[in-house]
Image (cartoon, rainbow, N blue to C red; front, side, top):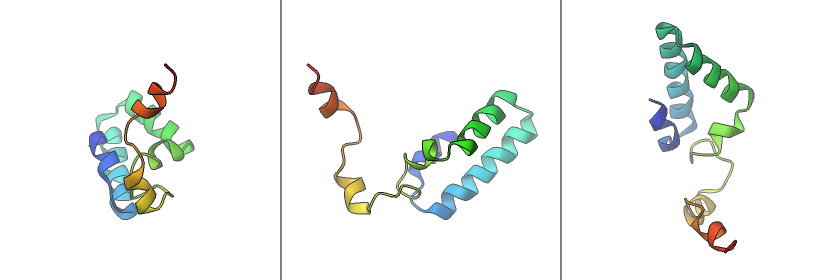
Length: 77
């Protein structure tokens, strides 16, 4: 389920996925996952900036921006 976070194209889908992940962490009594989720909850921009459904970028900017750091890395050589 965690790997699906960047694939969410609609805010509602992201929110539902996060609810499921929280429920699973609680069901499994997984402290490390619960701690990770708590960190992301207190810093929502961390996960929200990695998918189109929750990003504040326009769709045009999202699709025209590089999805890797190759350009920035090449500028430092």
